[in-house]
Image 1 (cartoon, rainbow, N blue to C red):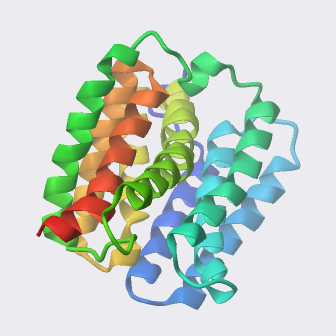
Image 2 (cartoon, rainbow, N blue to C red; image 1 turned 45 degrees about the vertical axis):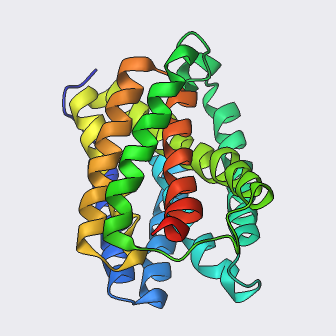
Image 3 (spheres, rainbow, N blue to C red; image 1 turned 180 degrees about the horizontal axis):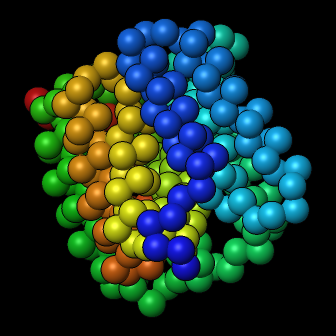
Length: 249
């Protein structure tokens, strides 16, 4: 492992993602798509070589996710099912990348030895939601907080959005940078990028909070190596944030 040694093209790709998200924060949607698209084009050129590019492949998923995120509302209205369709599309490149890199279940974090810690992850998700709600005060994603709506919301935010995002940021990006540059660098870069991916809320506080939450989830993943742990914490956070707290308050 080359300690703290990221390649120049990896740093450029990271900076392009951050630049694109700053543009998104400034409501420059077209320029956001242009910069993310440019990043993907550069990555595709790099992937034509025979070298391994695990970090750059992970970064390509982030740019792809944002482009899909901005384009889908043009064709469908923004609903909870729009979220499901977005993440369902993202699972295609995720699965292809898992096969391409030959990643094992253990590498991804699909282990069951730490399932007894799930109650802790639920409490963690609730705690994060209580803080984040005071920053965003979001509208609910469901019309009423009845059992059916909460069940549908839980399925979508746990098995679609949280699972997809945690695989990208924890199993792919954080892990690949850790293997190259160490756990601290991997944790910090993955957390900062995940924070900037919240730029769509147009809140500096949310970017800082999302980066902080990324640090907590990333550190939890380092210690447990359990994808279910971080997915459950992330999912419970979204259930409370968009399905319970808006009605309670």
